[in-house]
Length: 409
Image (cartoon, rainbow, N blue to C red; front, side, top):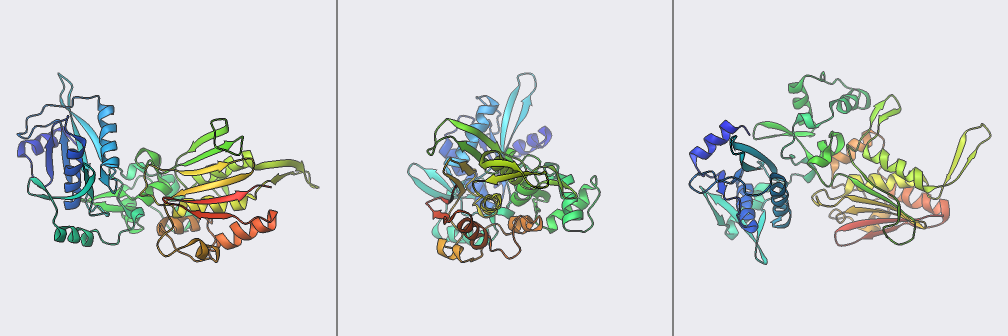
């Protein structure tokens, strides 16, 4: 936000989309104001501004204030909100700053609730005042949220510049075999990506969706902290600190290709490379003089487990990464979130198909990460492990995660 725009907004005072708050406001009170704006439409909370419009400024370090706001939005708002935070220098001579929390329009998870003591309450905005919603008002919020999938939610603070256009151009021209705009034609790129749901219009601007950022973002984790894979190779059968390797794999899910060659890996390929480093049992030379590796679990099975986790995890759990753990006796892939509605472990085993993240799944299929038949669990995870070492994978649904456990030879 430009300083001149902020000056104009503050001069006009509080409204249905503008709230002023002292920088030392209680966290739960701040959460209630953010929730009221999110349940209405969109808006801004200005931290460091008095009710009468007098600028008092931030009282804490900018970085610490940002962390505090993020924690408020995570711990005192349900479902958690990812805010767009920025600080604006109000007075250059004293370095006085104002914090701006921007709430995106068309929030898909209404009604949002704020913590008040040990309870959760739904807040709405009427004029320049926030109120606790009545039962009828809360029902209308449920109706207004609509059936928007979480992966199609706009990422606050993101823009076309946060997407890797080189990867996107290669996707459209090589994988989808269709025309793509020139790399410098921002208008045409925005139109194309909105049409394929990798971006969406939000208050008149084209903003990357969660799916777009996960698949093709330059640095997705900057705005989506749930976008990585935590890969750990343990030296013992229990989790401990003596790991052979502990890596956080971040970046876009998809690779940058040149023909059939990978020029720049995506997160999935990086996870497969991690498996190669820690699952090889023996290495030899075949009759043609080529290296021949033997694995304690087939890499195709590992790939299937990882792709399923990426495609079907619950991305609304934004403080949790996928966990990929290699032990001497087993491999575990832990995906945040329970199974999608209507799916059970028994139905997965016979090939029942359902997707929480349809766009992510279909794009992974375009890159041949996913079999066109969608039968990876019975035909790869289960059948290949039974053929390889006679073990049946454990598929375990827990309170807020799904675990795939594979036993090593």
